[in-house]
Amino acid sequence: MRRSIATVCLSGDLAEKLRAAAAAGFDGVELFEPDLVAGEMSPEEVKALADRLGVTLDLYQPFRDAEGVTEPEFADVLRRAEAKFRLMQRLGITTMLVCSNVATASVDDDEVSAGQLRRLGDLAQGYRVRLAYEALAWGRFVDDYRRSWRIVELADHPAVGICLDSFHILSRGHDPAAIEDVPGDKIFFVQLADAPLLSLDYLSWSRHHRVFPGEGGFDLPGFTAHLLRAGYTGPLSLEVFNDVFRQTDVHRTAVHALRSLIWVEDQARRALPAGAQTPDTGPGEALDASSLLPATAATGIDFVEIRCEDPSSVEMVLDRLGLTFRGVHRSKPVGLWTSGAARIIVNQQQAHGAEPHLSAVGITVPDLTAATVRAHRLKAPPVHRRTLSAEVALEAVLAPDGTEIFFGDATTAAWVAEFAGGSDLGGTEGPEDADAPTGGITGVDHVNLSGAWEDFDEAVLFYTSVLGLTAGSATHVPGPRGLVRSQVMTSEDGAVRVPLNVSPTLDTGPALQHVALACPDLRAVVRRARERGLVMLPVPQNYYDDLDARFDLDPELLAELRDLHVLYDRDAEGEYLNAYCPTVGQVFVELVQRSPGYAGYGAGNAPVRLAAQSRR
Ligand SMILES: O=C(O)c1ccc(O)c(O)c1
Ligand SMILES: [Mg+2]
Image 1 (cartoon, rainbow, N blue to C red):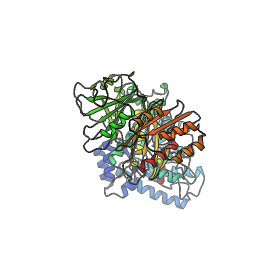
Image 2 (image 1 turned 30 degrees about the vertical axis):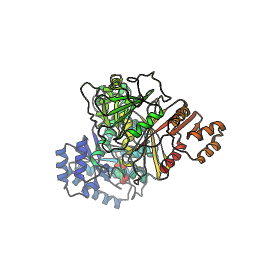
Image 3 (image 1 turned 90 degrees about the horizontal axis):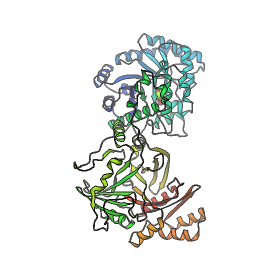
Image 4 (image 1 turned 90 degrees about the vertical axis):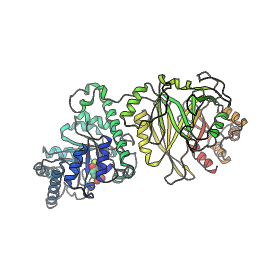
């Protein structure tokens, strides 16, 4: 299907917006009137630029307060409309968005609104313009797409159809299934926007909090599938009013936006039964399997990479936790530490002056080629790593938070063998084998990444679309310097868990990242680490008093938790023990012991951890 974006989604002036939309790969744009009015380009210049860039101008919007008015008022509506139809001829735009009346409507009568739209349609036809009537969620009388469709049916005019905007429909909780009752050719335009589920008046919610499909709480794939079943063949256009995207880099936002559209289209087509995928135009056009994105699933964490100039503090922590040094890479200043399935790479390459930070995560997938092709088709920026011809060349893409995401499958497992020799840090074994002694740590429980607040929505979409992870509910963790927003992304079976954190808006230093290592006997690992000189992050006595009040713990267990600086949580499904190593640079290691049913992260412990870390 054709892909469009409203100019209101992007930052910059109109020329910058058009260039960014074209460069990202959009087919067309919706021209948001204020972008034209505030600019110096004449309508003819705008048309010429769009033509040169190869993007179509798909919609002129919005035209407000057109129907449900008194006759004297309607005379002025016709006058205003005619001026815009003339303008649209100069722009070469043939569809105008007409919003349901929010301000001047005084007549709550479908026949009256339909009659006025019909007369507008007569006028529009003379200029070869079509009108797409959209029910705004805060319309004075018309705030439901089913009512706007009834009015359009009553208007019964070839130049009058409806515009469906997912925000207005889904924010009001209206069932989108009735879209299928509308003939596809009477749906003149479609606007897609997602949004977080907020309890807010519709106008504020719509004007400030829309996000791209896949980033909020609405079912955009389901919505889009209804459109396809209705036989809609026009553009899918993003209309996302968002305070952040209005100020971020226009080229980056345009690519981010296109990724959301590619993803939602793909998800919608997958939701259709095979039999619905046959018409040879419109929805069917794209429905052969080769045009679908290759499916992928994240099945596990292959490795976690920490990059730094001086690895000594990181290696000290890993060593004392009982991980084994597997040696240095045969061609690079990169070391590998393992325990069970946990593999941690310490990379000194291109790390001049860098403090330890999580630089890359390896994700195992069923099919490396499929995962890579999918990521590239979703416009994920590829990452280059220096590699010799005899070495395994791992494919990677850059996530919005700056983490490099590597893909691995059975064909790349040999990368581990490039680390040979062991070292003076105590490792003697050769390349890793699964049955090696584990030192109590068996794998990676989760990897917690952090990003800037302005990249957060993009990161959620990235992990959803590129890795097939699912966003859980977002929470805020109170810390001494503000709230940390946290959103867990997980694979279907929970094997890959990636909580994303955003630090408070004001600059409070780099946000911490961490890797959480799973161990079936956490207290034994902590005890042994302490014997080797590693003391876990101290936890206040008040925390343990509170723990006792909440859980009525066995006194012996409570004393041991207190002594070892181990934190505790419990829910109906099981228990969670965790402990935090001292922070090195921007990163720390967490130890986790979870019973199989426990799906959380000790949410109550995170504020205690933030406070303790900020005291250090
Ligand atoms: O907020 C508005 O006014 C507005 C304008 C045009 C639209 O298509 C829309 O969904 C909202
Ligand atoms: Mg809209």
